[in-house]
Image (cartoon, rainbow, N blue to C red):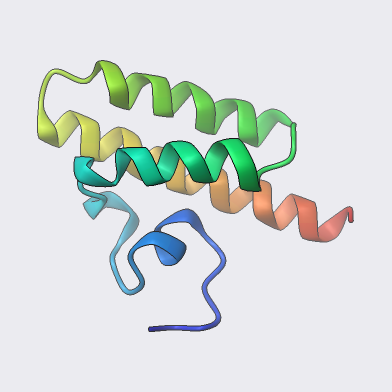
Length: 84
């Protein structure tokens, strides 16, 4: 496991690319977004994509949305580090 990873995927599935987040990780992603991210525009975007993942009609659509959740979660964490 990589100890330096900060993003959602890295915390859930170290070594897995953001676009390959399986839908089975949806509950963990929900908990992560709800408990680890501070309010802000990137967190709002992560929440919107999380909702889209829940509404997805296919596994590939769900996975793509979770990849976007990861992207915005990483941005939110980076912003939180800049402004503690």
